[in-house]
Image (cartoon, rainbow, N blue to C red; front, side, top):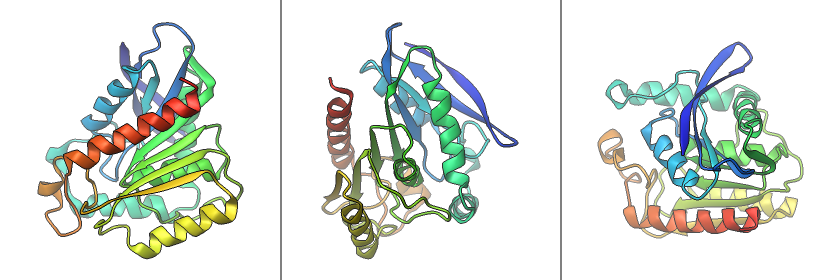
Length: 242
């Protein structure tokens, strides 16, 4: 596998994503990976390598223009402020993630007709927004995604397949958010799935969440993480025709 940092621009901001190419020189599907509210951390690199190991080209995007996130610099208040800015600024999330998707599609070994977006927490919102905007992705996958819509969210038909995987005890995604998401998907006639993991809280894929957010409704869950990846890979295989 070949891997490297990739810089790209969105407006006046320079982003630094991380690309892992598992194509072995042949045209391959491209998968965009959207990070949590924290920023692009080493876990996104791990997931990019996991996807490249299946023969894909994976790009872990950067929404903030800050490059690699350091846990040593973590501030809960700063994370919330960055996320709220991303949600409250009309079109910002979509504009920046679209720039990353275009960067991925332009890579020489990427088959631009076979693209997908996956995301974690805030990144799940990113994946869904790309689907709402009819970006050229075949599916959008969210691991413990937020289900609220950012300001300026596009309200058109959805052609990509959606898979959102949420913990039933997720403190960030109450039942009314799940119901609103389901109603929207049904109204639009989308091909969608909303999976609930019983007894599981928010950020179930992040082993550090128990230190970062030691509160009810949050928590790492290795079993839910494994099951979520199994479902994600199944959908990717389906849409990529493998």
